[in-house]
Length: 513
Image (cartoon, rainbow, N blue to C red; front, side):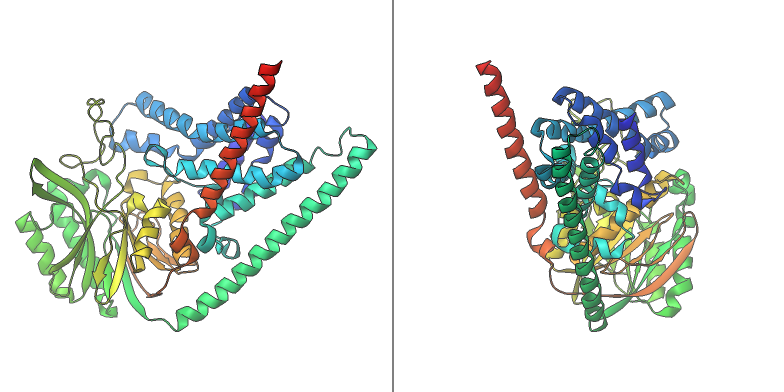
């Protein structure tokens, strides 16, 4: 019961629900449930908590597979359960590690948050990675709290939230049924723990306030560009239908023309806004190019691409930069592909599994961290799923990107929570590197995020729209840009060392007995 409660509270902290304050005590039921339990039972309790959480968080996977993969509901639900079970293993591992360590409160409030961050870090990389809605992502609207992301990444906020959860979990039962001497000891711990939490909050808030003010001043003295995003709202069911390709091109050109009077420096179209091989399909390419030439400005447009090479043809999910004459000046190829969506992992051993996207052949991954030179600036382009991976935007920032552009097609997800969840994660990419982020989504959510994580403007789902806004171009690198996930790695190293030491000690004790 407590495990299921933990899972539901965690989900409630994220969009669509968005009750971000739930995150500050969502882990408490789990920590109470595993207190004093063995490693095996703690693992099982954690697994239940994780399973409930992920079934209710990423439920939209079943909807996507059914609606656009045309798979039977039993298959869709089975895949959702399987994925949720895999993700639940991280929560189960966290619970088992906490049970193994069996720490006293004073040590627990330091170590348990590190163990939680370690499992998040592993989730970001193992099995191609799935860093979807970490604990810290729930706070994307709390500007003062998330500013430490430029030092610790989202893991710093996750650790702070886990710390508060740990303190609450230790404080709730400490006075129940205890001798007076233990109560006195518990009172001392309670005062010290509460003081530590208040101090850390004050430090975090102070840093956030200072960072907001200094970055605002920096923005005022930095160059800016007028960027525009176009949201075509093209239904996924007809997007790749040849009968609708001309209508799709004309729709994006019409919407772009609506804002061209504002004289934007660059207009951004979503992922695969051009649903054909741009540059290869001659009639459609010429139609799009003529329309772009009339606009007289630079465009970033999404389109599939291919390249012939020895041994066959390589297909790419790409973004093309065109100049005011409609000439292609640069191309970025998506570097982190969606498993079973853009390629089939272990295809040699799983030949019966197909893809859920309408395109020919598997996509080939581009180069991680590659940037595009635009005028005198470098742009970091994140195509859809890439925006959830901190290391990709970090590599781009290290390579000189002064503006992040996220193009995506979220039509797959309908009106589910997925577009809102993805947008919440995207906010952290701006804060981590102090870069503006421009987002163009086929059906929404499109928008502009400033280097402090403020959402300056955003569109609604499933509407045609074109919006322009000035965004600052900030040079330089943050601590996180330079050193990356050193905090999470330190937490992982400490957690592994402590668990290994404790497990070895328990083995020796059993052998002696």
